[in-house]
Picture 1 (cartoon, helix red, strand yellow):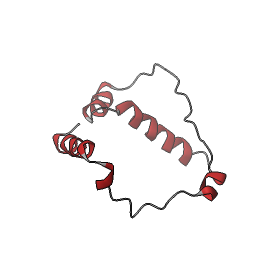
Picture 2 (cartoon, one colour):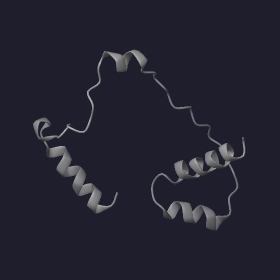
Picture 3 (cartoon, helix red, strand yellow):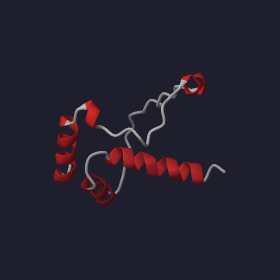
Picture 4 (cartoon, helix red, strand yellow):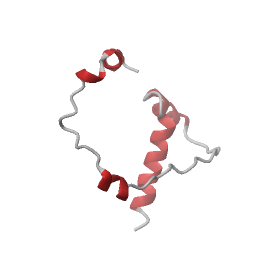
Length: 83
């Protein structure tokens, strides 16, 4: 995590509930929960694929979550070609 964001998280952790501004968040009433649907993420499948080394190196150089980003790109490609 970059230092800037890490320091922001530390500052937020120290905040008391009374100091948090919720004015831009609508309250959740009974009507919301009547319509709410729980959506669980699909389980991931562990696979072994062969990638060009420079492609893998580039994704890894982007930092943590590179596998998630690869998955997101593959999903976007799949959805674009499923229509």
